[in-house]
Image 1 (cartoon, rainbow, N blue to C red):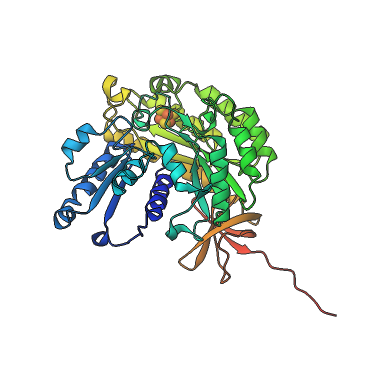
Image 2: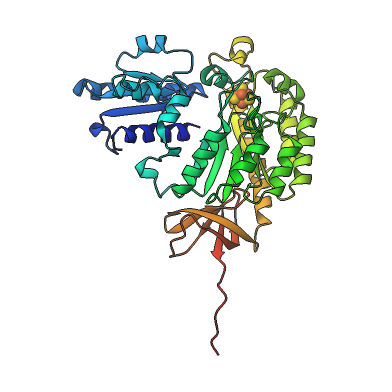
Length: 434
Ligand code: SF4
């Protein structure tokens, strides 16, 4: 979401005539777009911000803009007092305050992210920042801002605000515009992406939106994330199975295996619900890959409860497990009401146990690709090899001297490991002239 937000800030600044610099000392405007999902991320952002003060002293005309979750949606009064050298505070996904500041209020109409977006999209075009034009193969498109859930460990609803779906016409126009600028793959984003449209009375749901995006010429792949187990419908599964541009890769977090822990997290489902969901997805989309998120060491998690998480992961054999050790986050219900009583070394032990298990699982899953021919979207050349991804989001490296950027081509997998694969281009049939 932050990558997408930063691209929009870049677009708006270029629209005002600014250009990107790689050298911080040369900058007239510095935008620090922040993530504060963990306390450590907020501390890091604060450190980075403080390191800018000498530049501001040298050049008082320098404009420093703090943006994102550190500012949040509830006003920045406290931050203003604490950080007097910051000129502009912008909530997540909203370049409006910065544009207003730089134009000395000339553009008065920019009050919220929607009007800002209209400003950015001249004649229904979202112009990518120059540095991304012709280079960006895969783009992120936010479709739902904020979240109205209340998972007890999560700070996002209080920083990004309640759930707001973007109008369908705006999303489709943006995807069309990205396609015209050479983008081949779009990932539709939301904290709970499958709740798209629930706050709009006469619009489509996520499945309906995906059908509309599927119609856009030039877009070859469509992904979406992140799903929530309670909102992943059969209609959505059928849509993925039916439409060829929809990638069979699903990100649906479980967070913990034990029902008591899930209840304390206020996730709203049980372990069995999650198992049933995965079985249903696999019956409808047999070759799909599934990623999950897991937090170990949540307050009160016993060893027996942790072992339930272990068993779920071991039984379900998912393609990816994003693992995190619980860390207390000021402002969350978990920090206010629960005792962070799992010791750090025990959290680390649990993390390592799952990490080892997952490495084994994914190595085994990936072995099945050996010798297979799969379509890969090639994104860029890294250290002499093309880097691409399969429809199931597996990382593949391919050797070729040709310019393959942005191409979807069949390759034959020659080596697999847990985190990546190697493949050869398929040999073209030789022409024989008689
Ligand atoms: S659904 Fe996701 S974003 Fe929303 S509160 Fe829960 S963890 Fe946070």
